[in-house]
Image (cartoon, rainbow, N blue to C red):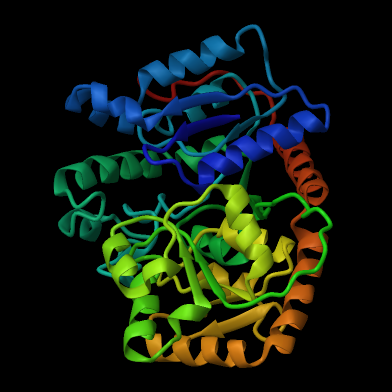
Length: 391
């Protein structure tokens, strides 16, 4: 399992840890090679730029790691920045089958979210990411955006991903379709969602109110939620917000004691047991919001934007409710209806729990993951080492 951890820990990092633990619990021999993007803070800028495009050190390190322990399959997650897709060529030269999970849209979008200025943007989908460079879509920097765009285009020109990866994992059908539009072979993409363990049986407790869990940022729609409170009289006493981010001060001012900042997972799950529904007002497509599956496992329906993967994961009026993305008035109307109809929301919560038990459990995910590995192994064929690029 290969992963380049983010500077700020995120959902992908948790997924990698969960999948390693899942495989080990089922008796598989797993080794994790983890690099950290926080390393760039101690690297010369020129070295960061080179490693983003082609990391010779990562190629050499991977070859050394598998010299004495040859895995049946290499499962790659994030390769940006300090690892680079060069590790895919290293695995290819070693004749080891590769599976890659694409958690986001980085192969087509410098921001990886198809979001610019708070709105969905697909200007670079299937194209050279000139617009992403022009707008400085990666960290607000045209220079850093140009470096990342160079990596994307070098590996697109070399056909790195189609030539070296036997199976790709998309988290949703929506994501799969975007990956196909980006040029990946659809017949090699498999859908495997994220998972969370089944919730322990607990005594039923009264549920009340709306819960928001996540980063307080534009892409997550926290400003839409605050506008629903301030302009459309969404009752503050029926709302609880957990998380941190750029809108922390505005959230504290608007909600007072109903904003509780960052909370550990255990407390988040406790709050999910007590709430009537989860709010997910994101204005970006989302990859696969882990909070949705956590909510479903706790019998908690979700009110979400009718957009991207959210519109796929939440079935309107069955496992939750959908509203117009970015429309604070529609969000307020939807939440008020949910507060006025607790029996309907409770029924949706039970449906959500059943969906979790059918699709998002550990055992189900293990079976899907192993079947994808088996497909990759069966498809991979021995080949002579080739010159993939600078070593």
